[in-house]
Amino acid sequence: MESNDVHADLKHVLKSKDEIQNRIAELAAEIDRDYEGRDLLIVGVLKGAVMVMADLARALHSHVTMDWMAVSSYGSGTQSSGVVRILKDLDSDLMGKHVLIVEDIIDSGLTLSWLKTNLESRGTASVEICTAFRKPDAAKVAIDVKYVGFDIPNEFVVGYGLDYAEKYRNLDFVGTLAPHVYE
Ligand code: PRP
Image (cartoon, rainbow, N blue to C red; front, side, top):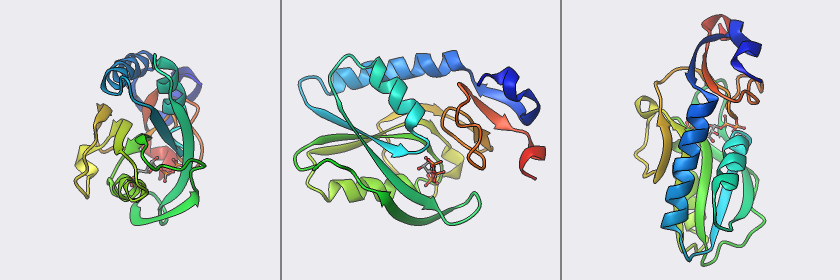
């Protein structure tokens, strides 16, 4: 879907399709360079990371393997609870592997902070994080994120994997939702 398809539901477009694709290409170039000569496993966190995983993986010029996890990070509503449950674990054994966790957004940071520690405890050679979006003003824990697409304001954003009530994930851009949609 494009911005015209959901015009009435949006306050404004925050990052356009072109801006996102250009930034993903820059991140992919950095990742290619940083992991040159090493095997890399990229781990997408379902469901939001599907878009960024698909675009990032195709923008890379190196071989990578891909795996997926599903975790529940929200207790109820739109606030992080800090309680993380694994709904679907990785298929891969992480012993000795270089792992890059790929996310759509870091909000409070609670999910990624927990996930990074969890994966590191499995004997990895390294664990780093790549996120398409980050909300610095929403951070509740300090977390070291190696690759950040965009720092964005603490607003209700949807698109490019990010949902409201499971809708809007399939927008090819990111927009700020108009309050009348969720109030
Ligand atoms: C989102 C996002 C992260 C998490 C970030 O997932 O993909 O996993 O929230 O929030 P935090 O930094 O406050 O912990 P969500 O639980 O909405 O699931 P989804 O990817 O299926 O939409």
